[in-house]
Length: 151
Image (cartoon, rainbow, N blue to C red; front, side, top):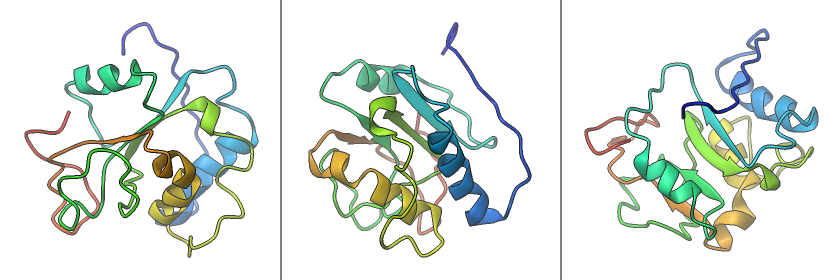
């Protein structure tokens, strides 16, 4: 992602799940993503070693979100319109047009969990089939992306 805009914000972490949730709540409510085409949310311990597949999907007008599935063991072959999948919040990419000031607030079925929050925030996008899912994330019941086939 050379020559691209990057923004890093630092604030006190309110907790494991709470901090992940607060990051998106704060960013959307403060309009930090306004004016951007895409937003890539990535934890500091996640490395993107190969970006070709991600960029290819970002350039596809039929794609508005790129996700990894926490439940890959249950739904391994779905590549889009994957309504039963659980969005991993260690990494996702989404068109900024889908991130309004209340995108991550007042959502149903969140229960203090960042992955539930992301699933609800992007439900319409996924229901419309404008989602793409990284294959081969090898989560094995733990919501962490790993493996040779992962970009």
